[in-house]
Image (tube, rainbow, N blue to C red; front, side, top):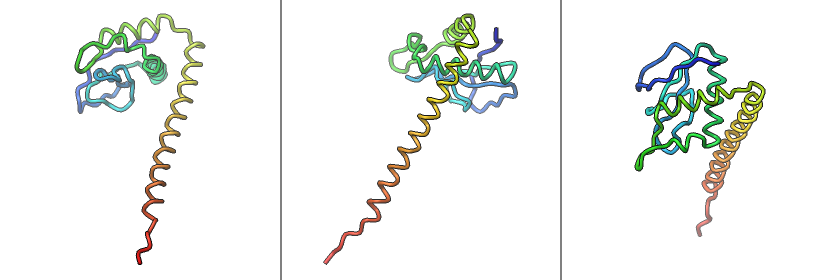
Length: 140
């Protein structure tokens, strides 16, 4: 079983050990990232391979909206550190390497495709703007 620690991230702090962040407030609470969020928990791991496994497990949990039942609060929703820790531990307890490895690969491909579509959308918007700016009406 993977060993990990979860603590509340303090904005501006840097960490030396392998780590990633989990957003703890808002509608996307539970979303993992390697870039720090202002309202986040930081997950520490022993090595880089454990970090990748935990990150992708959290990404799968977020993509599957499995953090949603743990959202609390009426105005600004949040997820508690205990709920995240328990959910990750439950997934690790039921961890079957082959089962999760396939999901890791599929989710990674889907995220790459999503990023590609995002870039294409930006490029299409820019092209549309350029097309309209290049149009010069003829005035008599």
